[in-house]
Length: 55
Image (tube, rainbow, N blue to C red; front, top):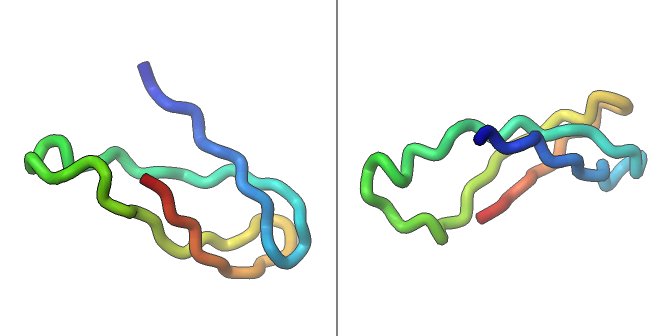
């Protein structure tokens, strides 16, 4: 079952947008799934760039 892309609010304009989360390679590599992951996101509404992190 595929996971739906989460919706996050932009800290600049407050509007929500989806964030694409690439498939985890941690499970294949035998790494700890509790590692913090994430990266930069560009808001599709105002163009602001912000960091989005998740477990």
